[in-house]
Image (cartoon, rainbow, N blue to C red; front, side, top):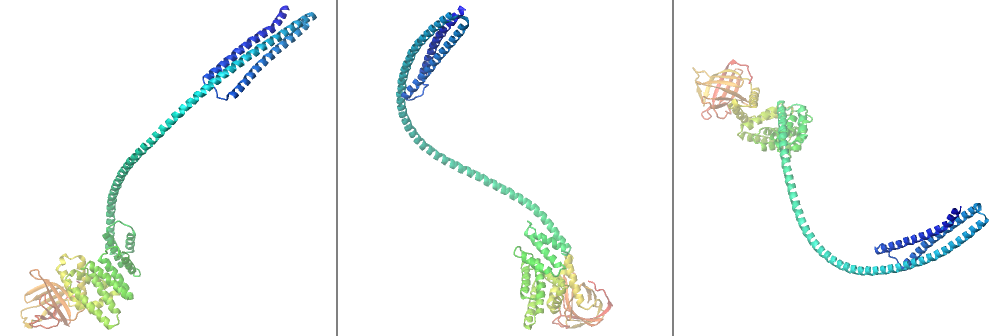
Length: 594
């Protein structure tokens, strides 16, 4: 028990000693913190604040921390003493008597007093320590302020030096910038010039390459287009040529041909102008051969109007256009239509002077105009115009032209609305037409071996026309009397025989024999006959004559010498050198085929 009491008595002393030791440790720790702060200040870990504010703030912080610390220690000590007193009292209540409790109370009182004294002493020491700490802090603060002031002076000097260096640097930098700007601008200008030149050169090179490429592409494209076009044109040319040949084989008849060539003209084809001109001409022929009388002439006129100014049309095309206008002129008789028809004929003649069809058309137009006139004076003028025109045709040496001329007249003789005009031409102008017929027949006969089918057909038509317009005198005829150049020839012991069969003849006269072609001129009185043959030297001879039928079995024949003009009347004398024969039919021949 005594030990326990001794422990309890010693416990406050131990606590006070421990507290004193704790205070010393705390002072040491505080000093270390101050040294650390100072060191940090030396190491520039500080913040610059006004001295007054810094002192006040620092004093407050120290007072607060010291007060808090002391208050805490005193409170802790009081708590411990109170706790010990409570324990002692509690223990004394149960374990000690009153005297003992009193002793304890005295001891406790003494101990409490001693503790208070110790506390007072500790407080005094603490105050001294705090005063020393304050002095130390003040001296540290003063030293810190001096250091701060020194640092400020150093900073001011450094700022001044830095400002001077900055000014110098700014001046140097400004000068360098100005120099750099000048140099840079100069270099930029030089660079721009170089860049512009390089750009220009590059653009020129690119443009040159582009031009070369475009030229190359254009050349290649042109070559490809040309090759493609040539190939396509070649194919189209073959197709169109085949269509034209097909139309000719069908004699240009059929609405399907008209439709095909109309579509062909409306199609944009890259073919030659010559081929397009042939297309137009073929379509014109198809219109002409059409059975649609109501529309075909209007279409022919429209066709020539559409393409006359675009292409150099064929003379045949203009002829067909003249045919269309002639048809309309025949219906309405306006002078404008007449002039248009004649103009188309003249265009065809201008393009091909040896082309005979437009001459025939012009003659037909003159005759239509003559039929429409009522004034005799104008009729006389037109008749003279016709005669002059036929004389012009006869004066042309080309048998080919005259052949086309006659062929057109013969063909149009079967056209209903033209029949009366063709008949009037053949009958009223038979004498003017006669030399034309003779010239064509002679040329056809002499070149029959090389004549075309068309020419042979024309020859047949001319011969047939003469046979149909003259009486049939086919048969075998013998001479009853013979007179030459006004002198009668004794036929005793001699026989004159003339055999006529259609368009051929055989003549035996005074120990001579001739055989060849006989041709009868149509619509002339007296009747005219021509005998054509080749002599022993293969020279072609023509004998022209006139004949008169005495009765069905007797004819009077007057002929000229070979290649001499035709007799105008049945006379024979030394001046004209004509021969007159009176012939009797001894044998009849009914064959009238050419």
